[in-house]
Length: 78
Image: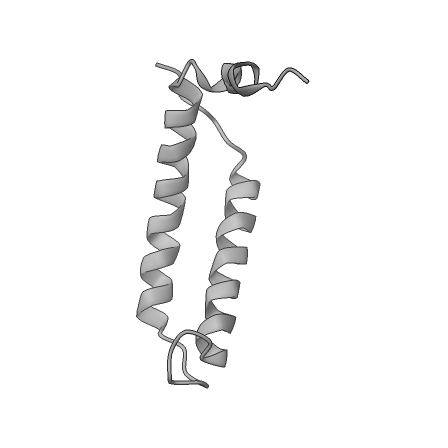
């Protein structure tokens, strides 16, 4: 089993970008009827869950052997 070692800085930038985006969407009230409010507990839970999920997906993708060959399998001969 391959254990990936992704860049910590890239993960932090990714999480910060997602959290900022969710905070703006919550504040503007795009998907809810409460504009001007931010749910900090939701953002904290997302901030804790997102890096774990991203790392697990990275580990799964590093260990799937057929994924690098996907482009060869679906290539259309024109």
